Length: 321
Length: 160
Image 1: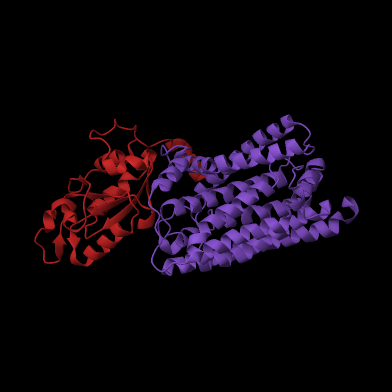
Image 2: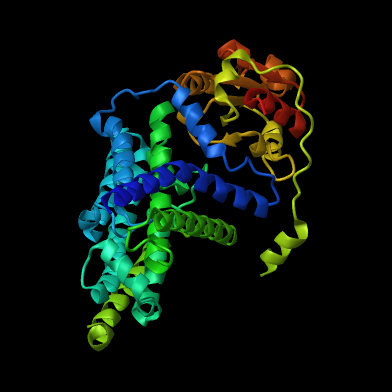
């Protein structure tokens, strides 16, 4: 069982690392096609990374350790997330550590590292981006916690593989009111956490509307490659988590055979590709929200998560136990 | 739903890609491998060239399909597209912008004004052409240059 478990982890991390830039490429390509453009191709983010790694690294005058360490910390936390989150198998050797609170804390660590780097540059836009990112993060992290708590009440644990395995055995949990409310809340939280429309525009050139981009304006060359790669990893892992929590079908729950793991891998790649395409297509129809309206959207999603927890607590009492 | 119908009816508006422009890839651009980030610097232009640059990235000419992308920071950029005669107030910002770009980097002068001050030569506020302030690697003549000429210059840099 252990060999298959380790194989599942290696496959999962390999797929996330190779697939994260491809997912971004797929989303840009989808958007380009809907806009009537030809598009640069799905491989373009990999070309960008290759080019950036060949360029000269620059450390701006006056920046310190926060600026230098943020890109490796961001990528490291994202890679640990890629190991922990159950995308392929719920019976992996690290399942005891894949706790919801650890996952949210790792997300927050990456966000804070980048916000400190934005402040460290000392530019007006870096500080502005950091302040905005923290405002959004303060509303998003509790929403992710609450939404998954709603699913953890019927499972009786905050351990992600236990939640996912429980939902795969008993799909009725997902179609309950609590499950549906949690899906809505978590989807909005994932959009905000990964800096997509309507919260942040990933392709903006106007500094005054930037959130994530404003913090990374001073990065160049290999550091910029790490920052972009880290952001792509986070998007892939969070979309994968969304797919695992709300569409856990096909995920390997017994981990006795390699075939089940491979099937689960193919299915999760398909699910994330479909989610990414749908998100990119939906973004064509959305405008960015005014910054002062973003807290309203996020407070709304927090309210949905709170209702999901309440519904799960009161309605799951007789059915779940 | 109106937008959905519009998307379906319009289809692809990007024109078929013209053949590769002659003149090989400049030596500094060999490392880019089909990915070029572009920073525009308006050093004092009348904005005619800016309109044509914007058109080069619109759905019809779609410079992005050759791997060029506009970015917001010179730190992210490989190529500076400089337009207009360099005015006295923009000479130092232009030098700083080019200095902030990581090596290897290219400067592309877009439009007659950028190449030889054009209409504004000898003006009291004009410091000189772009090549008097920063080293220029490629030039796109025209007043203003057509979008396909700008796209052709960018394709020489991306090599696609």
